[in-house]
Length: 219
Length: 219
DNA sequence: CTGAGTCTGTTAGCTGGAAAACATTTGTTG
DNA sequence: CAACAAATGTTTTCCAGCTAACAGACTCAG
Image (cartoon, rainbow over all chains, first blue to last red; front, side, top):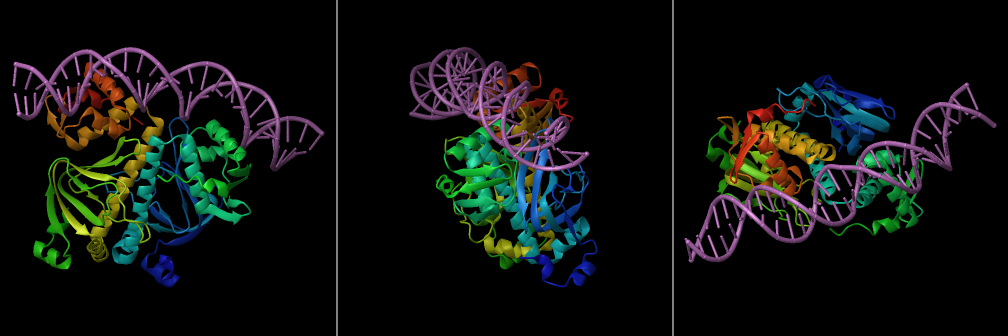
């Protein structure tokens, strides 16, 4: 799984001089929207939020990435200006590897199996965003919120008494950004869910109860 | 540009036995949503529409692909069932190369430069869909329609008298699917645009006038 | 303990655009 | 050239969800 462990660190360092292991605290940015960034990142440990800030000042969260995922890759073509369209922000402490464009390209072209892995990863990511697009165009906020909560439970849930507690703490605003809705609506729906016993939550903790799992849409 | 021309056809055929050159008429499907398809396609010539049919029976067009683009690639992981989430439909006659999964994987892992090209292509596609998502969440149908028309003019426009004539013929329904809106709204807005002199169109022909180009949003 | 800052809960009002329905125009075919 | 189908134009109705605005509640620093 870990491409950087198949060999010693020194070997890597010699072959790809720009490689470095770094780490960032909660809320820090790997890169920001508008930055000129030509690095490739591989998350060793932690969660990274990819989001976009709109002109109107709304934040739209594209996805949450976790251990093993990759970001930043390549700005396509040589003509395009290398400006990032999203923010990549640490949610909690994040450790990651970082590689410059040239070395990354070298890596891809020389390590065939790795290139396949990365291709799969990007493609999966693309599919995920297509699903999100679909959801936004066809489902109500309520439905999208359920799906999102279940997804979060699967990705970041830790088994507890009556369900899965999320290991990340999200404000309702962040949840709203994640499903592409306004905060007040999320607040109201969250309450309904709590009343129906699907959810337990406090300010810094969300727990998706097992009863909610039965609501998975059979498509 | 054409990866399959760097060598003779026979050599390719021997190395990757599943490779084949095929072509389909207008409206035919390369594959359909729900199909079990493990092929990779490379468009040699023509335009392909990627779309998704929702439960409610609405069609949502994800993107239009043209010569040089690739689709279908890989269904990620071995665990996922290989079911396609979209339709890939020819818009006009389409010629394409087709390769089975195993050969495609072999191709990727053995042809480094190719794998880089493909990665770029998938990534570009991902970025495009993210932009679309953003547009839908932040812009009015009118704005999205302008942007779409300009984009179409750039991709498929042929220079004419007062602007760019689209070489593909799109119904208003198809346009609506493309911007994620309802048909009546598109119809009304198209009329407004025509009255303002930004557009000329008949049933089977759309021409984006130069005056419309001045409306490109300065972001 | 007090006040500032942040998050959550709730209400009221407004509106973009979806849905449905129908009329009109254009193209096609026996 | 009917007459049928397909695309376009237009109107009406309706509502999900956004915005704005404010009132608790909780948290933390001094």
